[in-house]
View: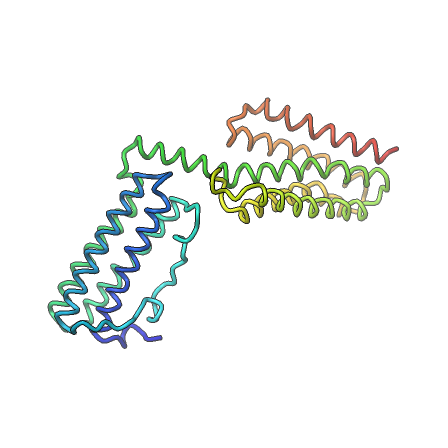
Length: 317
């Protein structure tokens, strides 16, 4: 790996050509991934990719004029000082806000590279082109910053609605399903153990086992339910991880109070935690599922109370 100061003018131009080719392909990848849900943003990325191809061609023409047809292989990862780029363009589905932030950072670094290269080169033609490209990348950075604003209000509203729907499908719904399952399904074994043994440590172990077991079960069930290709629900592994982790969290919430050695205090605190969990679930349903709070609370509380009562009755018998 070389430092930037060690690069010859030939290598600087070769690196610039490589960068422009990489940037155009990244923008093409963004456009391809976003074309169906966000067509207006995808069109803008297509235009940015086309501009990068133009920069690539200008650099390549100057390189051939100065150094001939042989183009050495040198990439950003071969030079010290470049920030490693996370390959977010490989992700499907691709978050639109992540692409905007990524494009802004990408153009900022490229403009900085061109300015630094222009300062070090002794060739007037190379310096002029690099300075020109630095100014062009500045405009791209501004475009990346304003990407959401330049789209028509109607198109942006449509994209925001699509983003909200995808967020709900891929994160909120799996997470909410896990939280509800973990919070409700583990009530019965936890409080049955509590009222059967009056031993806080044993009760905590039962709650811990129930939470982890439910989390693993829900994670596999959700991941295997569909591959997300037709439903838009996202990658099975991610969806399963979200569901499983939220299930475990929901179950652990009312098990943790039993780390307190006093049974009455621990049980009273567990009752409070259960009430908070049910309220949080109701709020999430109201916030993201457009369900009226009272209706959501009624649906959640009735199921929770029935399971809760079943656990106490079984444990006290």
